[in-house]
Image (cartoon, rainbow, N blue to C red):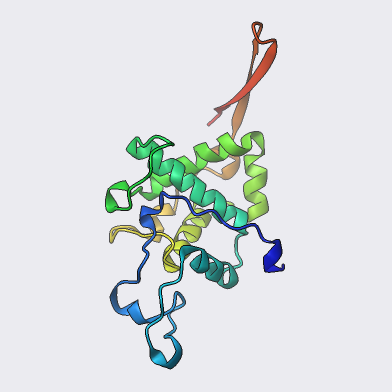
Length: 193
């Protein structure tokens, strides 16, 4: 696909997890671990550039899946740490969320965004279990788009959602209400799991 036809990814401000400068021994490397021309220091690319590098290197999941994951992460950080939508999120370690918190936020946010179609959307993205979400998270970490604590492990995502299959994780029941004053119906969803 031509780069002109791609919608830019919106990286949320929640990315306290976004390191804006390389640290440690990789300071002289590109996001792919390659030294710059002549072995010299490489200027740290912007998050958007690191994301494009990820998209060129990893073809397991589409751009929309990563965009959704960033939005779900923003939702998770705000929910877990009680930050209002209008408040900026400070870039620091206080706003870390663990794998299980993130997975629950992914579940809630997906139902909020996609309702009854959540399972179909995830299926179209090639996401079939919590391990896929963990794989995406660690691809983002590997490309310096998310940070992690030393205690965080990919195995934290194994058996996520209580080991339930996605058809159960995203099982919802529609709830319809009629408001006579407004003469309109409202729809909401309740988790069936």
